[in-house]
Image (tube, rainbow, N blue to C red; front, side, top):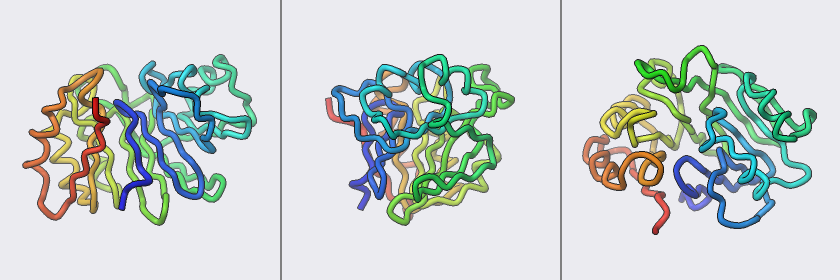
Length: 212
């Protein structure tokens, strides 16, 4: 049922519905140039990679990102008329796709400060609300997220670890959860094995980690 969702690697996500949407494209192996919308959560190199964006973007692609990233985008050569800047709490209707911006930050870590207003997103694709958390810890705002599919980081170090991610998904209680941000740059493939038994049984866990 979730064949329209692909995790390329790390937190690089592709959604295919009425439009092709990429989130934080990274380590894209070949040129596809099929992206209608590209969402960026924050400016760190493994989430905002202009060379990978070039592989999935086309002339008409529209870019959605935190308001604080405008200079980064312009410096990378993106046309201002194609850039849509968002802050937590904003909702955008773009090419028939509903995109809601939600907070994404660290608690007790310095890497992703709350005051930067970096983002996660809730995107509606094929009538399913997909929560893409970005690089974050267990945050109080997550308790208010309503979604059918939650895509959460589980690798720790820069984000929540698998125990915190399980607590988060149990609070949100979506139908499905797809763990991200583990097994390559940070976190271990075994984090999935630790995560799985901690998730409430009524939530279906989907492993989308690419095979080696």
